[in-house]
Image (tube, rainbow, N blue to C red; front, side, top):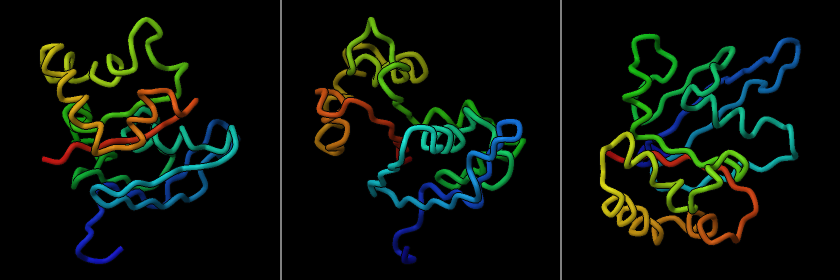
Length: 153
């Protein structure tokens, strides 16, 4: 990655153990703003675990994670405040089945950011042209999808 494309997500030497099982073995990841990165692998290879480690839904066993200049693993980081600018959509079994895809995607805008349903839906729909993967997810072109979205400033 060149100097003009400073990473918005930077993970270094991420390791994750579940007991004796070593799931993530020194994973490095850099993602520039507006860059699409696809994490592809067989079931059980650690894709979801890696993404969960990026915003501390899982604590990595070791390594470093910086998202938009915030050290996500620093004990002084207000993780709830940091997460307000990071959104994750998991595989369909983790979505609320009684809600539409758009409702699931905009839930944090309503519950965390305090937006009205109308305002959150408008923001969600307006973001679609900027994210082809979001369009595919919302309209069912992908059976399973996981992605991380970092909201700039």
